[in-house]
Amino acid sequence: MKGRNMTRWRDPAKDPRQEAKSNVITRAGFERMQGLYQHLTSVRRPELSRKTGEAAAQGDRSENADYTYNKRELNKTISRIRYLGKRLDELTVVDRAPDDPSRVFFAAYVTLEDDNGDELELRIVGPDETVPDKHWISVDSPMARALLGKRLDDEVEVAAPAGVAHYIVTDIRYDNAKA
Image (cartoon, rainbow, N blue to C red; front, side, top):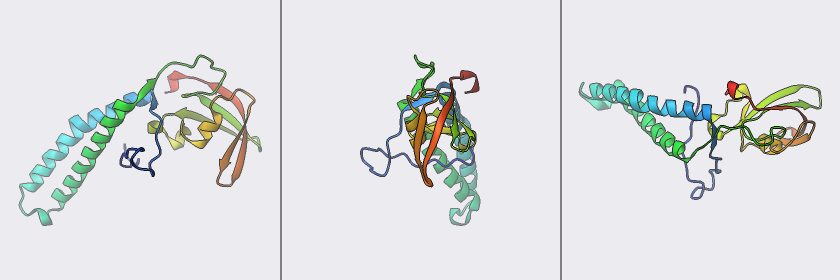
């Protein structure tokens, strides 16, 4: 997953800097995460191990840029594999529509209208599957927390850096085909 920074996992009970993440994920998000885990363990890690071994066999490691680079990438990959392994074990897959689809819950696509009449469509997903470019926001975000439980035509207030933002819920849908 190029371009995505993943911080080191810290136990929220032991590290006050780390907020607890919700342990929910969509079926598609879980499968993507599982696919990445499988790729890293079965393709990427063996490839980097082989490259590191070949570079180490060339002699002096202190001046060997290939060895240094591949060793660093291997360590990052191992760390990522550990994180994904722990995280996948913690997650709960939510793959059914809620009992009341007229309200905003996890995995909802929500269309909002602001005070200027501009529309914004968001999707509420687990913290491991947010995609800012698609407006997929974490269920733990302030916006998602403000939206949860709302119905059509409900007003929503969200604290934003520029002040409180006001929205009206104009559409709610649950569409597994877009996951």
